[in-house]
Amino acid sequence: MNRNIKRLLLYFSVFCLSAFRLDGVSAQKTKSVIYLEHPALKPGETITAHTGFALCYQEIYEQPSWVAYELTAKKTISVTSRTNKFIPDPAIPTGSSTQADYAGSGYDRGHLAPAADMGWSIQTMKESFYFSNMSPQLPTFNRGIWKKTEERVRSWAREYGTLYIATGPVLEKGLPVIGPNKVAIPNYYYKALLRCLPSDTNAVAILMPHAASSIPLTDFFLSIDSLEQITGIDFFHNLPDEVERRIEKRKSPDEWPLVKNNAGSSAPVKEKTQSNNNVSVQCRAITTSGMRCKRKTTNANGRCFSHK
Image (tube, rainbow, N blue to C red; front, side):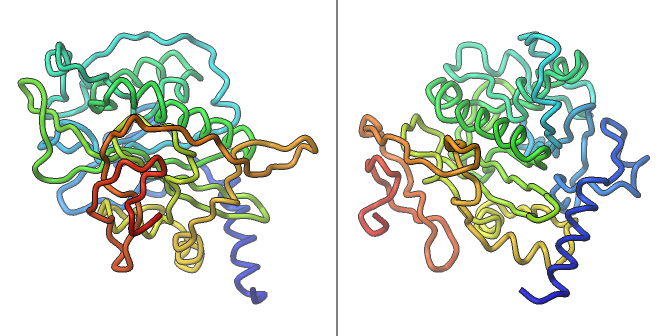
């Protein structure tokens, strides 16, 4: 790596750690503030800002295409309990989904920004239960692999100090719906993660089928570039171009270890692979054209016969 790129990475990492932020203030009042976690807006899209997170609501699907927030080690320490009081979001002009949409559907009101990430104040906990932060999730998914992923993200935040996170469903035409407001049921969910350290600026994406799974979390890793092609969302666009190009093309599973070793440093570990009860899901592999493989598979690793 040449000296100019090293200097740029060092400058930007220091900027990440010292950037001035105004959480919960409307975007119209903070045009000079750079929110690294916010994806780029498409024409006609708007940001709804709450105290601990922001979101881009898609009325046609009755849920956001992304929820973004900064998670620090300090914010992982809860000072309040879950409210479990799900309420419509008063900030959505067209109205968010409601309890009537989920009642009797068999789907969980799945958090996108987890309640456990918002326990650092009473207000943030309350807002995390807005229906605008929910998406219909199978109980076995929401309480299984999705919950484990959320726990892993909090562990990374404690280890690295600060993470910039964008998370949400993959929204596309033709999805089944529930409730009177026709809330779409996604086939996939994702997380895009960015960390900025003085010696290390890195990003990784996680994309998983909306199904119960016990395969290793690292099998769901992919590059930010690949996630952008699948979702059509431009993540971390506020990074300097050179840094964005460098980190978004990397898959980097070894650079996002799952546990710390006995010596105190991070190291990846292999998780036990178990049967997925023969649930047929779309292959999670990315083809040479950059798109998701369309084949179905029951393999425990989530890959079809061509991508084992």
